[in-house]
Image (spheres, rainbow, N blue to C red):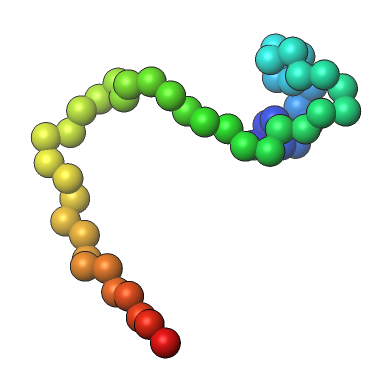
Length: 49
């Protein structure tokens, strides 16, 4: 959210040139925590017309 709000210190950290805007972000890496079980979810409902 800081990048989308033109937060200058963060734009300078990533060396983004003036006049360029960031339209998205991608997080990569491995999670710090692992979960043994997933949460039960409701089945997906799909409607076709």
